[in-house]
Image 1: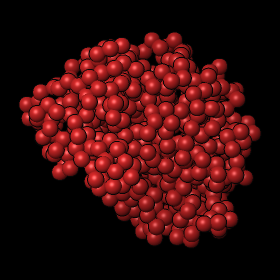
Image 2: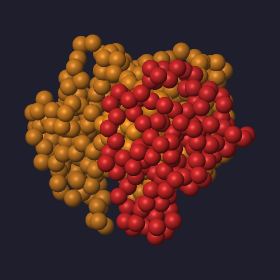
Image 3: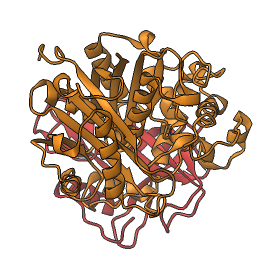
Image 4: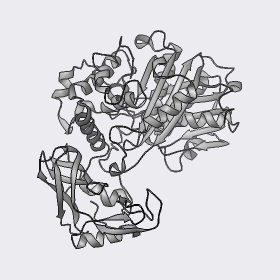
Length: 384
Length: 128
């Protein structure tokens, strides 16, 4: 295990799929064009791919995407970690590459959840599962009700306020105003968030992410497969993951999530800490999520996340630029956001983020959250 | 709630007791730990010696949200969903009338009759 990471592992390519409302593509064709584009950045083609990391693209994990692209991997992974799967796939790809089990790994996802109106409040579940017997009859909306319970508890324990949470949405929107691809770019104030209707108290509609079509592709390679790159390389310094529960009744703590595990693992592997991080891409499915992520990863102490996000710290010009694409709150949320967090982080570390570029960004962290507050996955990336 | 009720084999004793309006949890004879939902052994000490015992039926609201959109046809919004910590330790969900529970409130057991399934355990606030 000590050998892992001795040879550097790089992200050599990233791409977004078509975004927003997509009518002229299937999910498979969306992924296909993104994979080809991401590979081309590294001077590669689908023929070079020997590792495939995909989920939520039809039956059998990565298998249908492999067929569609003519990829026959020797290493494949479709771990079911919700929106956190894609940063976790960087972890898995890193380990597989370091162990010599593949050299060119593609991570990909696309969804047309908006156009196809696929959102559901209760997921269809095998009636014999604990969730179906002991959770579903109480009508806790999925996923927002789960996040609402965590938010209410965080407010109770630490005095976090709705105004502080609204600061997260405002920061994301200010970034979105600098991103031409963002789905919503209108000005947004704390008062606007507080005036939006309550959906599952204490979360308002504008505490919630978008529902859009979208996706992306990320290419992770061994050093030996990175030589034809057309872009600056981004090195994977560290990665980690963890999960804690599925039913909210089994969650060890509503206010400390699996990010405590994944952050410790990722920073430990990277040999850097939160104080070294220039730019942060948290999974902003709901405004509470970046607040708890900042605490779990050690950017601030437990309970201080509300204060930390105040006074524009996460927004343009702030001390910790975060959600710099506009995030799931204002740029795009295709149901599983993690792949787009990686795309944005890589573009920022290459210095190609245009008007929203964070000057001098050298070390960036992506933090995914998946399931019902269940999964955390953290990736530490560095410009080269 | 789906119309189709099909408990897993380990949970049958829970729902049989619920049919008699008794709320039971698993208790470990070795370490005294309580757990719900059912497992084949104690999750704390891994002993097989787990028994179903009747819970006190009292607990404390750990968190609560008011749901303002329709999730299930039989639950008209707004209504509350609360996470209750039983005095024995395990946590369970309950419904409350909207706005009728706050974190820290004490609750006691109640039941909701269902047509196609055993009664569903609920909790009501008895002191704030």
